[in-house]
Length: 176
Image (cartoon, rainbow, N blue to C red; front, side):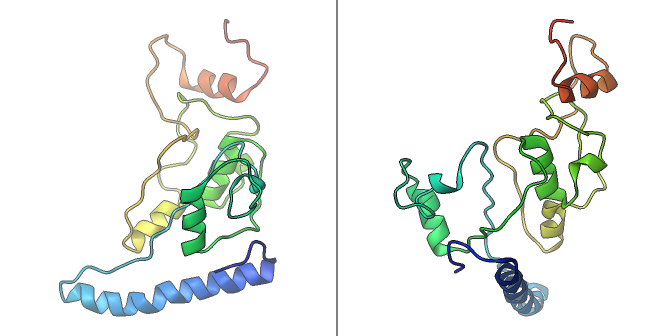
């Protein structure tokens, strides 16, 4: 397990060790899979929480005022990565960056956040962490806040291009 903090070199070492640990059993799993057995993969749980500080979870701060026994147990039994960086301080660009590995400003969203009625920010053919994991035989899911566009139809007739403009622009007046 990685300690509470690690530098970039330690992170890369752990990442390489993890990749090797997944790849080597994968060779054996491929042989078993062709023989009719289903391969086993390590579980991956990625938790992203808005407005949760590093010291709010008990595994990082024993003096935390918030009881987090389930998160503490996950951290104790797994690997914690503690040296991560976000391209933004708000939700949409951060989620986009984590899922795609790209800067959000390379998309049509240059600032702000999305609401629920925008066109999807992640293009259908864009490689994501989920698509890479699916290629390795994982089942993936997103539970909770998405904020990357849903492509829902609106009843009030607002055009999609207009939606993107006003939901990403914090100066918009909602009662146009």
